[in-house]
Amino acid sequence: MAESADWLTAEEQRAWRGFVRLHERLGGRLARLLQAESDLSAADFAVLVHLADVPEGRQRQQGLARTLEWEKSRMSHHVARMAGRGLVVRQECSEDGRGAFVVITEAGRAAVEAAAPLHVAAVRSLFLDHVTPAELRTLGEVSERVVAKLDEES
Amino acid sequence: MAESADWLTAEEQRAWRGFVRLHERLGGRLARLLQAESDLSAADFAVLVHLADVPEGRQRQQGLARTLEWEKSRMSHHVARMAGRGLVVRQECSEDGRGAFVVITEAGRAAVEAAAPLHVAAVRSLFLDHVTPAELRTLGEVSERVVAKLDEES
DNA sequence: CCCAGGTGGTTGATACGTCACCCATGCCCC
DNA sequence: GGGGCATGGGTGACGTATCAACCACCTGGG
Image 1 (cartoon, each protein chain N blue to C red):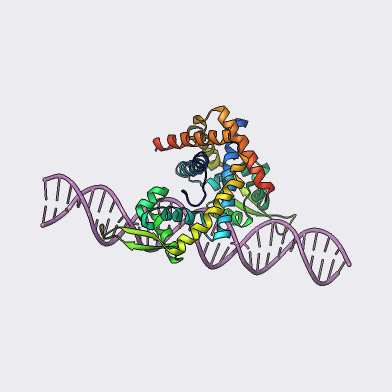
Image 2: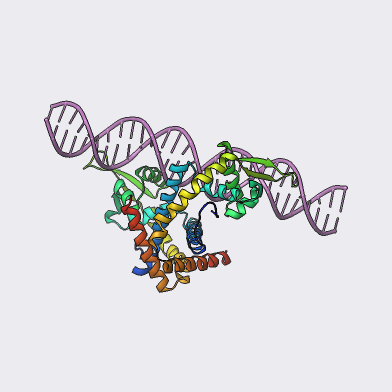
């Protein structure tokens, strides 16, 4: 993404490209750490954190998908893989014959409990430690505003 | 990613989660627009923009990979797919028997020239238009600083 | 009661990124 | 000048995201 036809001002470009790069690097780094230390992908981690935090450690698959803002297909594929690794199990839903619960296993709980503090520490040391509180607030405001705009236009 | 063990302050969490969500949404949205309007993935677009901007529209594969910060394997796979679609062609390198040039085709040039203004307009309307210049500057500074930190620690 | 449309979930195809290897060529130093 | 190592590149396997199609079940209106 360089200049081609009408492009952005220097400041716009700097901010936009910086933002993209930041997320790429930070995301990649955090994902690799999580994988190396806990053998979990970022997606695994997100699923397990939610399940660990919900009564009985189980939730309807579609509900989980909505919370994480995933497509149902992605959730289905992913749950299948996680079940294969013993992190969760599927459970039939008696109230709704179509439904399926996803339930975190003991192994899943152990994995997420081991991973969470490491992950938090990584977010801190790689990101939060290098940002001032004022900057952090600005970042939060901008993010919320733009996400809201994106949502209302969709 | 909710609370589990020691977690983040409310402000930290808001900023961090907002930042992640923002990138996910914005990235997804821009990618889908590019795909729908121009039949190019974000990766295709990045490759073509660079090739269109370089003398003779050709560059060594490894050089391209370094510019985009991709792994050589990813570049190899991707160039193969793009070549299959006629957006680029591979060319042998006479100075270095191992080397390969990637050359943009006329079709590739046409595609990127059609896509670029639409993409810029989308970045503006979905993101830049909702951020003040001061916020943009903060964003640029934070991004550069954190990326620099990440680079020096790797 | 039946059926039309909606919802929950699965599956298979395709595209993509990463990893671990492999091969060939270039380069350098003894 | 030959052996070892680095470099440029390709390949196949695997995990993963998306899309489209599909099936099963539920639900509401006639």
